[in-house]
Length: 413
Image (cartoon, rainbow, N blue to C red; front, side, top):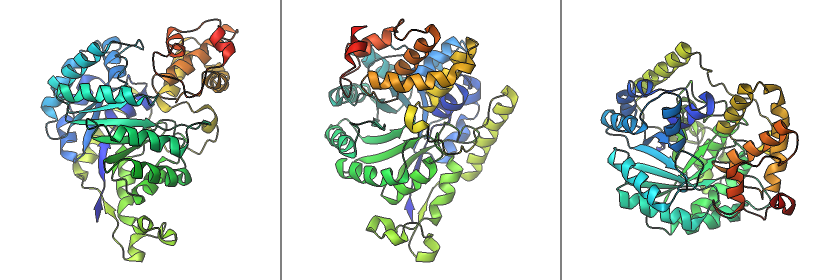
């Protein structure tokens, strides 16, 4: 049977998507660390600059100390740090020397894996940051491609970017991220095939959110097409706008036929036991995995945090494309201003602002720029009366070129 490996995203993306990145303290993470190390994950996604800022502002904790202590408890499984490569903690562009120092400290504090999410898909920038990470001593560098729907983001666009990135010797792995949960099984078929052909033999991982309810079935289709590393989350931090449950994906693997890799369309959805062909398996310690789930379930109950549930399909996500983490953040920000009732207006404004700003990928930091500008437009009543600094810097090209030119009227503001 073909083994599928799992990257756990519970602590970082599960927490960010469902609990606004504020739900887990150092103690909640460290107390379950040794058990998580026994599960058998390929890697554990521990933190990113956003979470480091949250640790300081909300919990009064030292994020570097969290890294050190986590690395002492989780010794076998590589811990991961995420970065855009252009900023650190805030949304200000930082010099390369700062990024080099950050990556050095990340490595010295025991993290072995770094993923680079440059939502502009600026190949030169990704290659530069990959080099900084390797020079700092990082063992595995992952370059992330962010999926979106726009007039320019075709399968050919992504394949060309993947091929250019894969030529970099400092990039070990590529990852397709669908932060908005926008992929469908039919789109996965063409896109994954194109990416695998473009990756030059390097590993391709997938990281899809559940916003539209299709992530799990998209994972299974990707596995049939040859993907053998998937990102999942442990309940109660799975589903909703988070990622699929590790239990669901692992449980489905043995029942899949491998026929589709041979182009046998009729066998694609036939269980392995009917075809006599090998399926897939996950080499995970399920006893340890159950203990991890019980731990985070207890945290949810004790702290009054929401539990992720499978969502019904919502076609509106394909219009506004707001990712799970940003969706939670927008709701929290409006609630703090007693303006929850205007959330629908903000989503409608997001669609318009994104088009005017040149269809940026709705991922960090661009989703924050678009979402914040949309919220400002609604709150103040006049569009672009207030323009956040991040939007100005984006328009000036500080975060890479936009996919298409920005609307001239908006540039004039």
